[in-house]
Length: 344
Image (cartoon, rainbow, N blue to C red; front, side, top):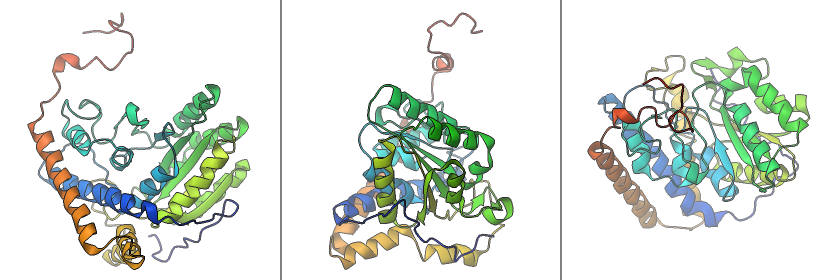
């Protein structure tokens, strides 16, 4: 099992300076609370069989995406694996559209055809949700190559789980990113377990950021339960990426639920989970907000109520929406209209 005292010491890219980040505190708190409550509701609805199929929740990892989004700029691209509900929400996708997608409804962000694992929102530069472990990492490299080729000045941040780094395609992607000096940030969201197998049981290298050294890539390991640490690391990595210097960031984080909703998580103890809940990223941020008097309890409660109302609206929207017309099943398979080899 993962150690509850795992070293989260930040290893600097060069020297990560932390300016006053208090202007982001309110934004982070509302964003992380929205993700947490959305996932809690998704779990409840899954139990009621309103949501079907695979469903992988982000509960506990909210600081990873929240800190990244505020460190990047409009136009930067995002791609991740199948634990993907949080990423479009953090980027501003309407929670109602994300919930409708979980329901498989036509009003979903992917028109009901993506489901939990394959969210996609081009307007907000979120290029998926991908179901093949590690298979999306080379796609991130391709996206970064396109940004470099078009001279947009944008980058691609490519998220993956700790299990993905054992895939050969990931290492090919690292190599090409360095060879072509692409504007890319690789992020390992290390929640300690590849499905049910701990990092210690599946990798000789347990400090996963060290894999970057094989490719002479700038790399850092930091506390993924601290949104400030995430923001600062991504901010500096972005400066480098725009100069053609890729980075590998390992966010040491934790998921409170199993790998998916069908996983009882019997490979770890309840005590271990409780230890990590004491380091909850949202509670840590709340304590910081109150300590620095950025907001008071009443203001935070107002944010929390706003989020509850959004979740209620999202569920109502999903419930009232219609399923896709079966006649549209081929509409989003091929770009070419009336593709000649499509069999109806």
